[in-house]
Length: 133
Image 1 (spheres, rainbow, N blue to C red):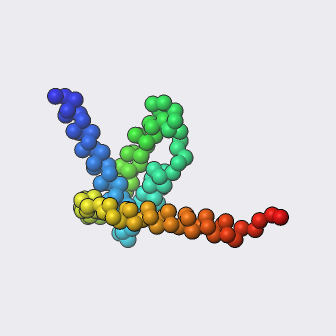
Image 2 (tube, rainbow, N blue to C red; image 1 turned 180 degrees about the vertical axis):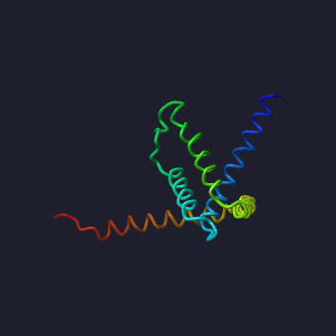
Image 3 (cartoon, helix red, strand yellow; image 1 turned 45 degrees about the vertical axis):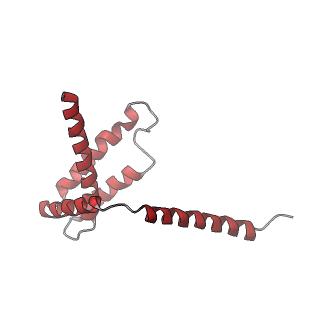
């Protein structure tokens, strides 16, 4: 019983963290948000997406420590710098964005375009690259 409550609270926390991440992205584009809050939101997103970590992920247990502690703390700090009314609007918009259905056809079209682009680049390199005699 207790583990089910913990699991549901962890899932709820993760959902809220995902919503707040999208809300921060939306807030960073809002003109009512101060520049320093925008800069922090961009830095947090860059760190989250960067392959370079303070503690490399391949180190057992503590490798994911920065992702589990630093990112939520950074998100919390950035949220605290955004005006409350703007954050409330962005959270509502983020909830709507996360409710949208995903399009498998769109995903497949993008993957096909990337493959076609890679093949075109490979063909261009092979066809026009100077060959040594």
